[in-house]
Structure formats: structure tokens, C-alpha cells
Length: 259
Ligand code: DGL
View 1 (cartoon, protein in one colour):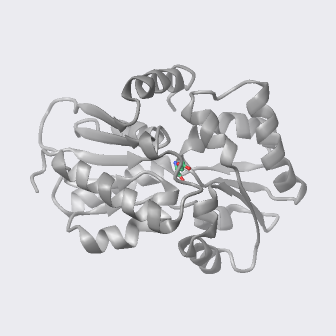
View 2 (tube, rainbow, N blue to C red):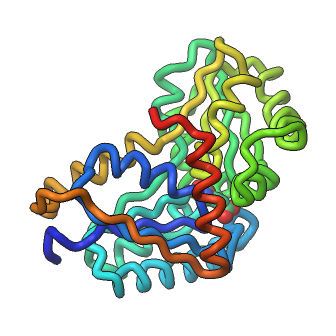
């Protein structure tokens, strides 16, 4: 695989764009091919088997675009498919997992909240993370199916979203959690709204930056960093409605200050 080929990134929709944003900042010379599998959105309520087969199709598509490394920019797909993908395809993969480890190092109350999709919370991989890093802690998990719908429509504010956020997050706050993990890439676009509701005493963690760092590390290790001097190109593909995808993308980034 040549170093000037693109990095492939996929998600069920717009969630992985938060990861692309960070990769772009860290590695501006890299070309990126983004695939939003909106035709099969949402992944969260689907069986692990179904998400695995959609992930295989997404990877095959990204390989047809000559990806040199693939980022599974979706917690649900990483939980269901990452180990199988690594066995089936001989290129480097980076996945996204909920930030249980950093949360467990950071909590003072010994209570961590995790919001994610149903698929992620039920996955063996997630249970393994909790056992490995948070065994002596209380971990309060809440599946939030409505949130991905809001973000996929580009709605990251407003009274209806506020209501939904309260219904999911209030029980976590009432439990005394002082650290809240955003375990779904779509929720990155809700970070400010979540922080506002959670208040200054609660740390809200998401993983776009560490994922971008891991991409950089793996490219370095495999001698795959782009050698061009120019700015890289980002190309977007979607199953389903690409035009609407572009509109939502514009909306999400116009309301979001790049850190
Ligand atoms: N963005 C995906 C994740 O990180 C989930 C969205 C969906 O349910 O499709 O889990």
C-alpha cells in the first residue's frame, strides 16, 4: 500500500465527521475518503451480525478507493466488527471505543456515566472494557436512541433535544457520576449541550482526538505517512442521500467551533 493513498473512514452517518475533523488537524497532508452508510442508519439497534456485514461492505468500498488504513469511526461497528475486520483484511485498522479507561483514571466519586447505542452497551467488547478498567467503580450506562437521530438531521440544539438529553442524562447525574463518557461518535456534536446540562463538576469525555493520534501513530509505524507537500483532499461518499448528507455536514460545522 502506497503512502500517498487516502485514509478511509466510515460510520453509519455523520458521527465519524468529528473524527475526520481531528485527523485533518493533526495530519493536514493526508487525503481522506469518508463513507457514510446512511442507507443503513442507525447501526445502534441492529444485531452484531448485521453490523458486521455492513462493516465488511463499508471496508470493501473504502478499499476500492485504495485506502491505506481504515478508521472505523463508529463505536457500534468497532464493538461488533473490529476484531473480525482485522482478521479478514490485511491493512491497519483504527477503531473507536468508549473512553472507560480515561474516565476510570479521572473520576473522584468512583461513579462513571456512559451514554452510547444499545449495540455498544450490549457488546462483549464493552463489558470487557468495564471489567478491565473499571472493576471497582460504579458504571451507569444509558442507551440513547433518539440522540443519533437528532444529530443525523443536523439538529444539535433546541427544546426537543434539550428534553431528550435531560431524560437520558439526569439519572446519571443523580447517581453521583462525576465523569460522563460519550460512547458514540454522533454525540461528539452534542458535547457542548451535554456539558451545559451536566455542569462544571462533571467531566465529559469523547475520543476523536485520541483516535486521530492513534491514526498518526499507526501511519508512522507502517511507514505510510503522506509524502506530499500539499493539503490533502477529503472526498465524501454516502449510501442513501448524499445531497442531504452534505447539507447536514454544513449545518454541523457551521454551529461548531473547531477547538
Ligand atoms: N456513530 C455510531 C457510534 O459511534 C452510532 C450511530 C448509529 O446508531 O448508527 O456508535
